[in-house]
Length: 99
Image (cartoon, rainbow, N blue to C red; front, side, top):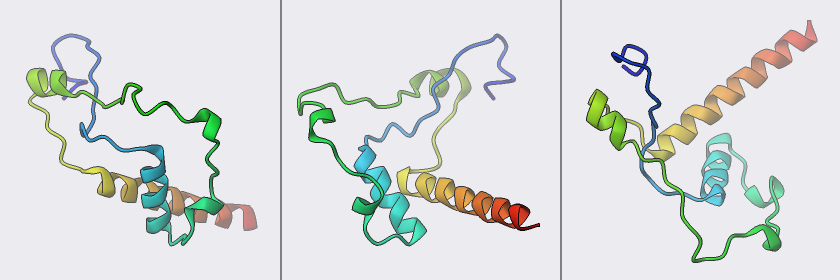
């Protein structure tokens, strides 16, 4: 829809949900069958934003208004799709390297 729009525009495509990087990591590890996400990434306390800092969230209102677009995929499903695609690519790459 964005590509076929009458004039070039920038559109944000987002669920509008708010999630932390930690939540993403935990969900991705669950999908991948990794039991302890703490083995994947360590939190450096000096890099954590203050609790009152701005929370960033994708705003797809323009896409909805101009294109009639609505998100159909929620956070957990999107993470699953991403992880499964990454795992599939890793398997294919591993097979190519063995040849």
